[in-house]
Amino acid sequence: MYATQALTDLVPLADELDKNKVTPGVLGFIVFAALAAGVWLLMKSMNRHMGRVDFEEAPDPDAVAEPATAGAGAAKQK
Image 1 (tube, rainbow, N blue to C red):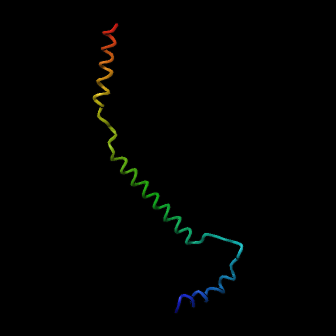
Image 2 (image 1 turned 90 degrees about the horizontal axis):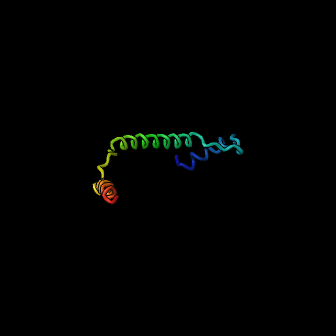
Image 3 (image 1 turned 90 degrees about the vertical axis):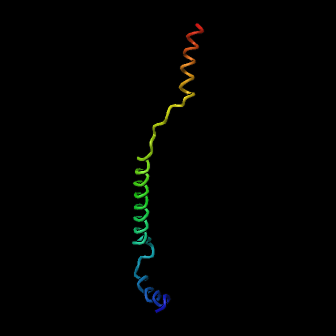
């Protein structure tokens, strides 16, 4: 059976449908559900990876040394 022959068998069924009503149907729901599941899995993966990140930074030696010398220098100038 060819695809065109199968489609011609379905044409009479299409006449019964309301032509003024447009719905996404089952395929639209499946696509939406697949996108939602994909986003959920990506968010779960992102949270797992962000949990592994170490946010503690070592203090910058130049930034720590400058206020200490500036404070000592200011005290000596007075």
